[in-house]
Image (cartoon, rainbow, N blue to C red; front, side, top):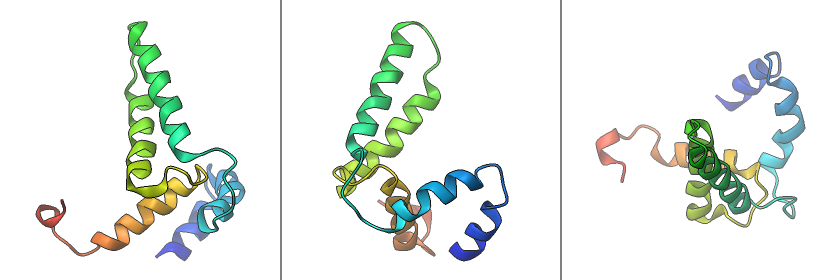
Length: 102
């Protein structure tokens, strides 16, 4: 339940982030920073880390998070909308077996 999540999350360490960005997740406004650009930036960070021989696991994961949403039609949206993409994806596949998901 989304309302329960928000109620609990506001009391946790990331509650301030939730307060700051949640409205931008739920409402569409002109983007401050496009989601596809965030994915590209994290891809560049991961590439630079790899070039230096450093671990890039987190940057790769964040890049994938944004670029997957961008390929799903969210690339021109404000970057906090990445959460909305995954919420919609979860609704779409709720109750389906993993084998039935493409």
